[in-house]
Length: 169
Figure 1: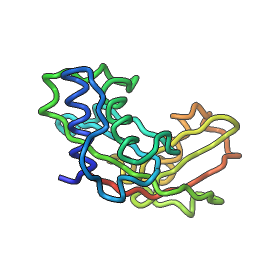
Figure 2: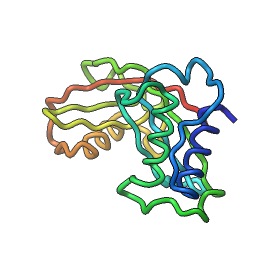
Figure 3: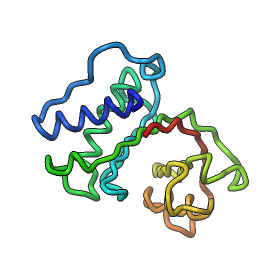
Figure 4: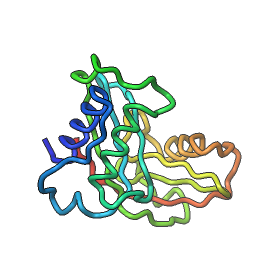
């Protein structure tokens, strides 16, 4: 198990069982000490159970970002009730560490398997990670990101950004 996955699993279990937040101890690999946006997704028996993340880092390092977002995925994702203790053994975790986004001109620079997408219109911003099950076309990827941002589907004057992730599961 990769140290990122072990870290978030332990953080969620400690939070759900004891209500405590602990960033982890011991030496961490260099990649976990860099600053980066991080998304943490929880799945229960193959189905999404929570996913929260940050595009830009809000903490000192990716390890802290992962712990913060793992706990939020388990307790604050508005699509799901908080994770209960009896669910912990059924959870699988993935950690996506975002590479810096780059602005692109159009859909031709996207690939749903390789790149995530960020759509921006005014003050609204929506993100969809790459390689999501059931998202097979760039059009689907952008449409979902727009919906998450509350951007109407008829809008076409968008700023588009793509990014790659390092995924650990």
